[in-house]
Length: 517
Image (tube, rainbow, N blue to C red; front, side, top):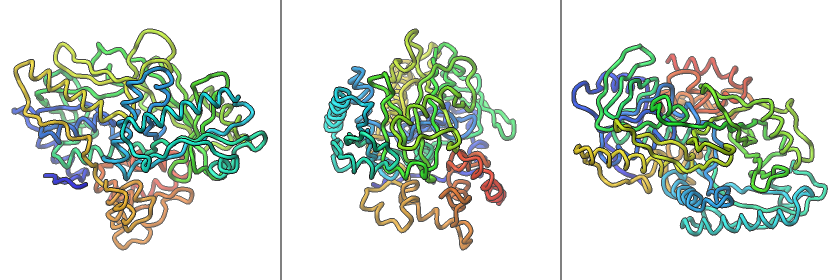
């Protein structure tokens, strides 16, 4: 799964400074991408791998916005199938297969999702869910994803449910239903891998770089670290700013919705080795999920609430969302959990295209590509699983617009359906990597390079705090190879140490030291 690449995949402050200073001031680049989330990074990779010259401008950091606040699932679209959106469901299943079998097998694993059959789940509702799981099996087959990658759904006896989820209520438990879906080791890991792979194909990836006065022909770029500015001309421009897309292209109407999660320790679940699926009482197609996560944690979500008004840099879960998630989760647990058990919370905003009516939960998740009168191409909506298809559609629209304008770009065909990201390899190769499985699941074959960053300093092979698994060598690797520029980049994005306030506090000093070196 290797492909020759003409440039280094390393991102760091030295490369950023050099590429900023070398921005062309006369000849335009082929493509400017505004936004460094999963879609923007995916567009940069698609374009660079087709042979185009690319600049990606991100005001903050890679995956600063919605892309780091997902449920970390690479899912096959069962929810969309249930609502009749067969096309979106099939697209999700296809893209899930691309990730788990071809482009990022090191970052995506098969995760069993278990719904315990408790007294609150009637037999008709259980039959409906079982039918949905069987339809999900059919989607997997239609997407040509092997059962080796994602096993078929099945019924489970009660004792097997308790093996997966020891914290489930015993009383009245009559077994369970299981369905396998994809889970990312972490969503930021995917974005960073995309950006680094794009850099390996020559894309200039500029974080802390704001784009203003954006048009279809370029933008003014501002270095947020130095205050310097540069006019960058581009043959085509794509707005992939997510929930901020309307600030880049004011004619776009978005209707953000907030999805909130709770963060718990694995210990309170017993531990949890599968996703726990809990039906929301009174609704037929809505569930709360408890998902095993890195750093011995569990993420519980998801809400879908209207989020009008000014868009915050970092959204927060509301008291109502916390109460809703706890109440729903506790319907399935032997020992109810309370706020005192929380390690933290996080929330993200979905960049949904405003359809004018109904609940945000009912707004279509299909992405939209919109070309403005000045030629600026914007891509909104969609979801993390389908980022690659969104990127392909947006770039194709930009190329078509350039063709119509009489300025065609010499781009090759899309390659990203089979193009492996940095660190990727087939599963037998990954199993032979001489590094702990946790690191292989985050870095793939590059896990040995992460360990090498310790450079004879044993303390960098130890966890950065007592209650997390991240080691110091990962922080150094993030500085030298992954473009981390400050403490927040290290603790809140390249790793998830920052989701626990105590762990973050304990790790800050080491993070500062490594940045200073």
